[in-house]
Length: 311
Image 1 (cartoon, rainbow, N blue to C red):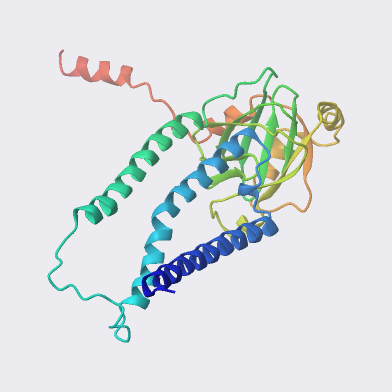
Image 2 (cartoon, one colour):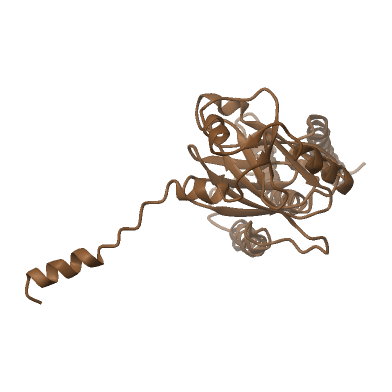
C-alpha cells in the first residue's frame, strides 16, 4: 500500500475512533440521566415540556463549540508534544489565517445570535403571568409559603390544604402566590415554573398537568431550619377524583379561620398533609395586606401648616 494511502487510512481510523468515543459518552450520559429519572428532563405538563426542550436545545447548541474545543485540546496535546517532533510540522513564520479567524469568531457569534432570538421568544412564551390557552376552564389556587409549610387555598371551592396540591388532569391552574414568612421559591419540576413567593407581594404562575400522578413540589430557596422538609405533593387526578376530593375536604373536621391560621403560621413542619374547610375567602388578601405599610392621610396636617404660615 502506498505511503500516502496508509496515512489517509490512519487518519480516517483516528476520526472514526474519536466519533465512536463521543457517541459512547453521549449514549452513556443519556442512559445515566434516564436511570436517574430527573424530573426536569421528564416533563408531565405543557410548560415543563417547553422548558425541557429549551434546555436540550441550548445544551446541543453549546456542544457545537464544546466538542471541537476539547477534541482539539486532546489532538494538539498528542500531536505537538516534545516527543512527537517527527510528525508535527514546525512553521515558525506562520502568523495567521483568515479561515481559522473566521471560524473561531464566526461560530460563537452565530450561536449567541441564535440563543438571543430563542431566549427572547421563550421569555415571552413562558411568561409566568401568561395564562395557558385551553378549552377547559382554569381553576384558581392561592399559594402561601409559611415556615416551613405550603398552604393552598381554593377560593372557588371554599377549601384549603397544607402540603397537598390536588389538581385535575389537563386543566390549567392559575396560581397566585405570596408569603407569610421569609422569601421562598415555589417549584414543581415535573410541571415547570419556579417563582418566588414574597411577603407583601402577590405574583402569578400558570401550569398544567397533562398526565396523572404524584409529583414532587418543594421550595428551591433556602429559608431556614425547616427548609429541607418544606416539600409538598402535587397530585394530578381525573376530574371526578378531584371533585370527590373537594367534596370530602368540605367535610373536614378542621376549619381554617383566624385561630387555626394563627397556629399554622407558627414555624414548624408537618408529618402529613391536611385539608381544611375555608372559613374566610379573603384570607389571602389579608395575608398580603399584613405586610403593607398603612396609608397615612396627611392632608389635614398640611392644611394646618398652611394656615399657620398664613397661606
